[in-house]
Length: 158
Image (cartoon, rainbow, N blue to C red):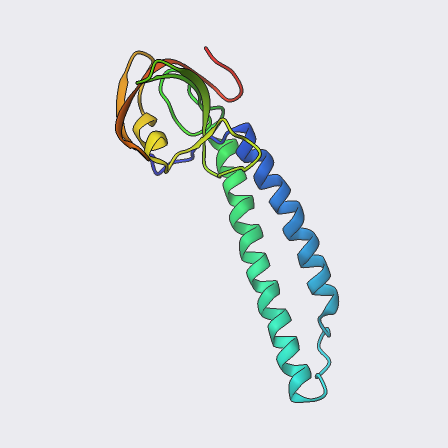
């Protein structure tokens, strides 16, 4: 990563927005159970109140983190189409001759089988590369290579 605002893929944005919605709903439920300044009765009540307040603080931290990441992505703009970065759609030809189009993202999304995370061996090898480059990376079966056929922005090839 560059240290500056990073673009985000459409898939990652959708996942973060879903997570943010879930966190806000959880936060509303937890906040509704807090006693609003009245002193809880016994020690068990006090401990329960402290646990809920701690959970509320953790939820607030997660909401702030995700909101900040989405804001950063907005500042970064769309993914580049000349070099591979987070959010890029990349067509690669593997050593066995097969081709696949993958999206480089931040978050592993079980429903998106074409997603390659930026911290995976292939994702790390692809970052900063261009169409025509060949990358070496460590696959589960051992070292291998992939040739970058094309690079596009989020959601499409160029």
